[in-house]
Amino acid sequence: MEIVDESGNAILHHSNQESKRVVAGIIGIFIGFLGIHKFILGYTKEGITMLLVSVLTCGIGAVVMKIIAIIEGITYLTKSDEEFIETYQTNHKGWF
Image (cartoon, rainbow, N blue to C red; front, side):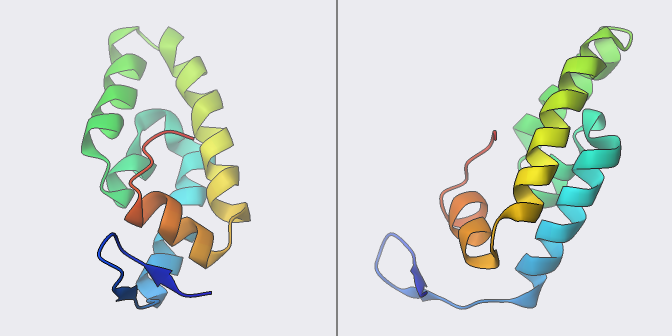
């Protein structure tokens, strides 16, 4: 499957994208309530949101952020490399 950008140019598959997928998925599952997996993927606003909700609510909001992060981590790990690149790198889908 060939992935193209908005202009129709082919996007080359890089192993760096695969490693981002795996690292972001694992970190999302284990310590995702801090939003670190979002920062790895380049989603700074979403990462700051998760971090602030977890910290400013004295951990109460961290429970919700942890559930979201587990779902996202599993989603990252179950997608193929092509799906992951298209969804999270090309289309910049910030949540789920």
